[in-house]
Image 1 (cartoon, rainbow, N blue to C red):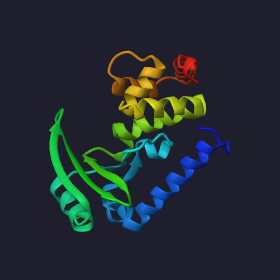
Image 2 (cartoon, one colour):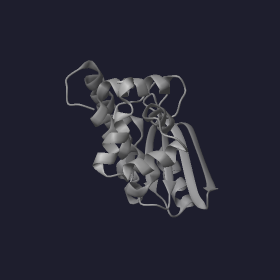
Image 3 (cartoon, one colour):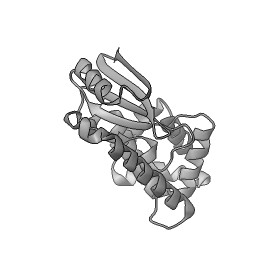
Image 4 (cartoon, rainbow, N blue to C red):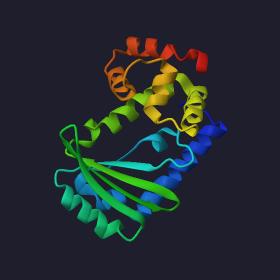
Length: 190
């Protein structure tokens, strides 16, 4: 995303300010500090669409404690629901609830937050959006509004083959010139 003062940037900044205000009111980052929470996903990137949730990723080694902490602080909020599953050998906990008109998802796994795929995807997507600008972001939002998930939308516009989640991670490991070359494939869309 550029630093321009166009309407999309202003709208994105206003949404992000609203979200951070809500997170401060709920004291989510403070109350979950021991889990190193980070706001990830589409909102920090300004590519959220109607129905997007606030994704807060956490480093969680004891799922029961995490759920109990969340239930203690947020259990009274609308739609509170917690589930723990093992996916590909990794224990993952999802806690969902709504507040301030936003669906909120707390996601925990025993991985440092800055090394979780959600964080790595967001970093790569941020680089792409800064490089390709508001036209590309608008095309991502259009695909998302049509029901497509974020990483598949990026992969489609960048003409990436294979699993979009893995391809986005691989893209983040490329040298800058290779990264830029892949991003140039999206030129017809911007």
